[in-house]
Image (cartoon, rainbow, N blue to C red):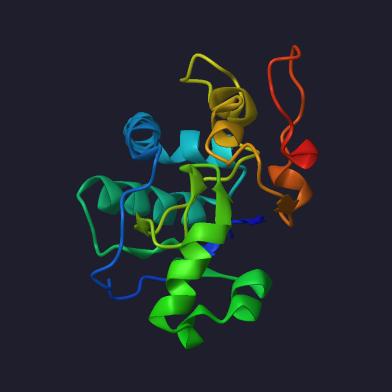
Length: 180
């Protein structure tokens, strides 16, 4: 069984254990961050519908992310929110962390999909954002069915993600995550 949850807007940076791995769509995340780094604060503010102070903070996160820091940590330890406080990954044994890495997935606007032990740096980029600089106009179109293709074909999938992260059918080309 695979359980899918969504990322959160709020993140923390934790020390990085040695058993972390590279996200499957890490190259895509880098392309997105590079494109965002070319945006001005006012463009980020408009794109993300955030205040100017949050746009400034987001621009700094992008610069830090592209510089390879400040530090990376496992995805399941990086997010803050109700789902993650309920997950209580701080209490996981190494066996629990291995099991979670095999059976839990985290949806992310920036990374597409993450395993719990994927190494990530703090970022702000949600699935609902539009990408005027990409060939596709929304993250749903950008990720297409690639997220669904990373999931095992013959496993039970439990989608516990929020409505924002349930992909919508566009031109009959997307496999909606709520039908996995």
